[in-house]
Length: 381
Image (tube, rainbow, N blue to C red; front, side, top):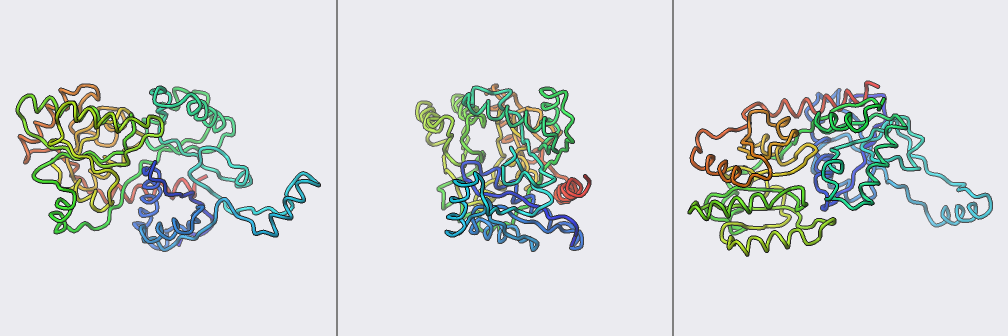
């Protein structure tokens, strides 16, 4: 096993941003693809021992240790610190996490300031392009965090070259060491024999398109609903299955409004909402769909696209820069607000099932490159 640095990874499971949890899970799984002597000891900083145990089980990575973060104090320690704060205006008892390297960070917590290598993560700069999807407070918070990253000159990891290009436009004078880490996904073994059972479980019959995304405004699910409406008017029968957490904290009525559109357009037989479902079920439904549809207005590095690539599945995607970076010529592209174009791509896929575009390269290489790039970022200061 690789020696020399105490490497901390911050992890908490949050269904309201499941992409963040999946990112860390896949990051850790990828390390299994390194030779044993090159694998890295990781210290998982989490507020929940249960989250850690689930992470350890789901990743199968042998070199994980739990670090409670933030650290808790027992009753006596809290009493001592409360007294010392009153008398000398500071805590006598402090718990310092002893690590050399911590990732991913969006700001510098007071209890981690002493660590030498604090590595920031910027998945994307969506707030610069779609500020209407954020509250003014969120936009300011993201701006302040980015400004601090630049001033403090810590290393920044970006999820895509597209995100790095955007950062360089908005922060041209940044001297930070900037790296791109394009993540890959690592899937469990899927039992195809379970597919009939999964379809029966969710009441799915026949062929279907699949769109697995959290229900946030920028995911642009309305494009799919509008495309299905267009096709129905033309007498073309399709079915679309949506999965994902049906809540956008920035727009709590978002999912309700989408479902109302489905009702208004009389598409209840064509469009199914399954909500947040089991991950294995989701992957099986992805694998067996006519195609995956990813209509996002903005992405950092789409987990949906990576899932599709790993499954050698067909993807119909919005033509944003990051999707083109991920798929190159292996996807069906449409402008995200051109609903007719999306409808046309769906028909193209249905009419030419044998000739469908797929990511037909060896995806294992993507996983290995992800692990190697991570190791390089850790050990090459």
